Amino acid sequence: PVLEKNSSSEKERKRAQDEISRLLSVLKEMLTDRSEGKPPKEKDTEFVTSEKARINEVITEVSTEITSLGTISLLINQLDKIEFESSKYVVDLFAHVMNRKVGQTITAVSHILQHKDILFTLLRGYTKTENAIQYGAMLREACKHESLAKEVLNSPSFYDLFEYVQGTAFDVSSDAFATLKDLLTRHKQSVSEYLEENYDKFFDKYKTIIMS
Image (cartoon, rainbow, N blue to C red; front, side):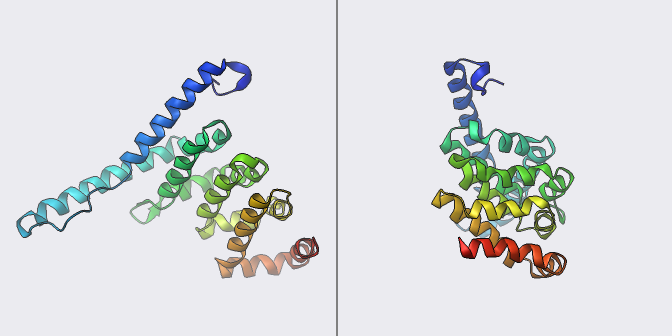
């Protein structure tokens, strides 16, 4: 609530933004694996291997907590209220959790499948010009996972991308086009199934881009 303009003074908001920036920086530092370095001496190999495993386990635990506690969702929903430089940390954090496995499972993917509104919050981010590029980067990161890409492709909200591609801000429309291209080329089987079901609607929308 402190970040809302109508609920606090500018001084309080600035203090909250500074604290969020500090915490995001600390979190980024925590999740950076610095165990790589100069090759260990032969006698130290076992210790270094053990230490790397321990660090990896800690990073995985922290990443899992970030996801399960809804921290990512909270940051995404408040991204436009966070200072611009700090919003880049959110993008890095999102990319990290989207690639962190627990066993054979990526916890963040399972979490988003259970909270699909996260995907569509990212998609609607193209309407927020100041942070559209960050939203787009996170959406593409999520859609590297086929199960999440299918959710976007098979949603009515997918067609909003065509509107964003034709937007007036060049950097936003270019980023939206990059997302559209990625969705249509990365997971060929899913795209093929999507086009079989939605051929006419898709090409009607696609023609509007060609003719604009």
